[in-house]
Length: 345
Image (cartoon, rainbow, N blue to C red; front, side, top):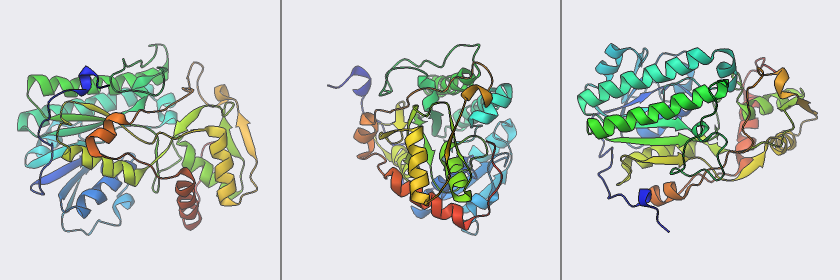
């Protein structure tokens, strides 16, 4: 049955034929760099804006000599930078932001402020220049709501005394800002709520679970599972996520709407550790680490994260479906080819 929120009239796509530069904020980051490659492969000119605080030039190594790629090193939170990069843009994919549970636990105020400041400056510049925006939000906005998470559900970021809720609330507030500009300034906007996205170039440095498990298994170190390992996640390959983001920008009727973007196959964190160990042929033991010895008191790990992808599939005709075993195998191969770095336990 179609809900009222799914019955809106179709609108023109955000992005049309290759003409004008497509801006990717955070384009030197993990997801952003894969989106850049997807855009270039489809014939678009791409302007990357990244302050390189967590992004890396190396992430763009495969395309850095591409004649249709431009890189600006700067913060999108700077209004002058934001205005300059959107001035002649065809549209903006706004991926710049601060992610990672370790960063959130250590610097909650900086994480919240940087995410809000960057989004606010970008949206104001885009609205002034009438440049469409696709904003990448997070599944964190659903909090402890019932699964599967549906876009029409009420967001539940959490209590104000909890640190994790601050990131979720900043993302939810950014969505409201985007739709506020959409309604008040007639700015074409789409919001994509990303679920766990994994693949080459993702770092385990800031607490991302799969690259951390893979590196530990390849190094023969204990695979550290926080808590009892019963918490579940759904993992989508980054190349499929990048393709879905671009397809959403090209989909008629996506304007003014929220879409879950991710995979819907649920697995426990403990089962993930076992799969990584098996695929890597590793002798690593799986070590459970009490959650409160790693994160501050009151820092909650959501028990389940499962998206409904019905709305995404209706919009673009498909949803990410790469098997987790294949993703792990690719990451094990990547880890064996790369120098190992020390990760937090």
